[in-house]
Image 1 (cartoon, rainbow, N blue to C red):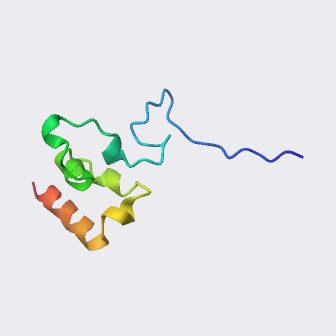
Image 2: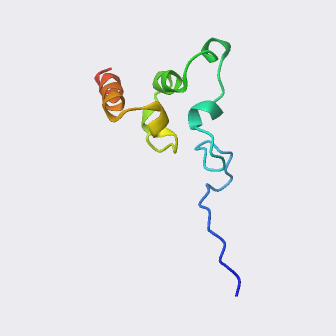
Length: 79
């Protein structure tokens, strides 16, 4: 008997905008302008308004503590 292959959920016509095809964090996959190349992933995601996407990332715990993440979200919601 053959083992079933693990089913992968990917977007139709996926171009990896969510990082679902790689283990790379979304912040590293985003195209950056010259002025943004020296920014950390956290700062880049904050500037682009994509902090909520950070929590979905498999590398979330490497970048954020829960307190720092909550504070960053509060700052954005005040703006």
